[in-house]
Amino acid sequence: MPPPTYVPPQKEPPDLGRTHEQQAEALITEQCTLLAIINDIPFPSHIASNCPSCRTCKLGYLSDRIPLMVSIPTSTLNIQIPRLSCIDHPKQTPICILARPASNSDLHAFTHCLSDPTHRVTQELEETLEALNPACQEALAFLENLQNVSARNTKIVTSLCGRAASVVVGDLAKQVANLIYSSHRVALKICETKMKEVSKL
Picture 1 (cartoon, one colour):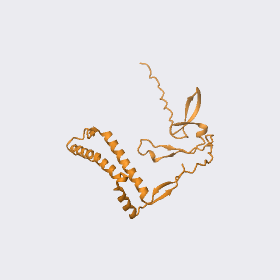
Picture 2 (tube, rainbow, N blue to C red; picture 1 turned 30 degrees about the vertical axis):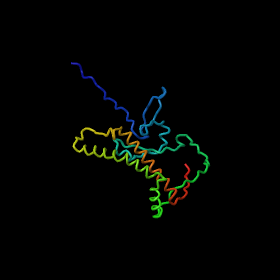
Picture 3 (cartoon, rainbow, N blue to C red; picture 1 turned 60 degrees about the vertical axis):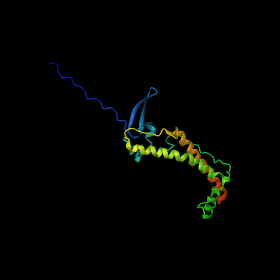
Picture 4 (tube, one colour; picture 1 turned 45 degrees about the horizontal axis):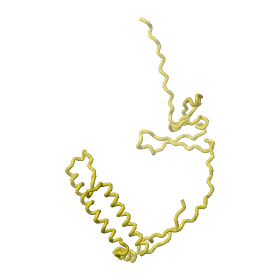
């Protein structure tokens, strides 16, 4: 019976770790360079040795890992961020906005003007309701029928008033937006306003 063969223990793979104190050897452009790992990002050792200690971050509490953060001075990275000179932007024209809170007299005058047919707000409201009411009733009936349907299968509204539901909803949204715009234009003519400076970007 042959003597037992000695098997040396397997060498554990190097632990790359997640702090700049731990280093790993890597082959870069066919040259062996000593690197350090900072949050899975390789850094040359001469930079990592000058970095402050990493700190944990609680932003990853919903993840299976705890992120590490480190603040690296630009001098350590040997870079210089150019400072932009102050650019004098052209002055923008102030805009007219409604004064808030609206007074009772403004509210009364605004309500009265909305009924004036010359502003066409009432007509736009009637046209919007003519399209909105039947679509709303059909959607409510669809939701009512879902109470007797199993929730295992997803049900969506595919049509409203004989048209594609997405098209109907888009058209209704445009009508409501136009109604709001027309009402706002009337308010700017009737109610108290003030000028507001536009902030520079």
